[in-house]
Image 1 (cartoon, rainbow, N blue to C red):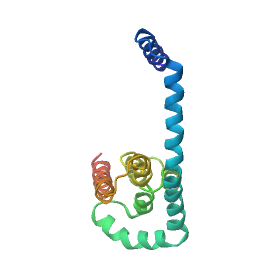
Image 2: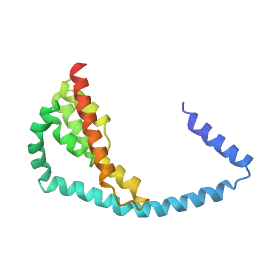
Image 3: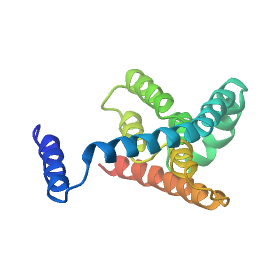
Image 4: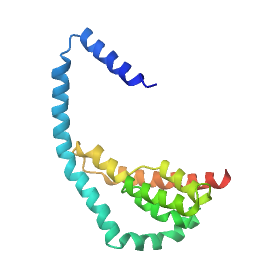
Length: 167
């Protein structure tokens, strides 16, 4: 398995030589385009990171957790996971920190920790991924794809908790 990536690299390099492609100029041209893409991506990522920090520091996070806990509980999601569910679409590292805290507090084999692990693995950082995917495009209507992503993440969380209850 350790040789898979070098083998793929060598196969692509051999194919490029066979097709008489200047590998070095193609690589540097691609790297130059990647650099301009990263520069266009930075403002979007900075906005996402600032929104995450403001969401937590403003107290809005705590109010939203308190407000949504009963609704999540009704859907079969433990109230202790409300913060994880709200943080996950915004921050992968923040949700990983909360997942680690949950496992330390409730134990690795508890129902809440199992749900937290499956919820963490079954969803994605929607806003970060949206910033990366849509930064290169000039798409205006982002509300629908982000809304669908958030709804599918919630559905995955409900399903994950239901499966953890059964298993």
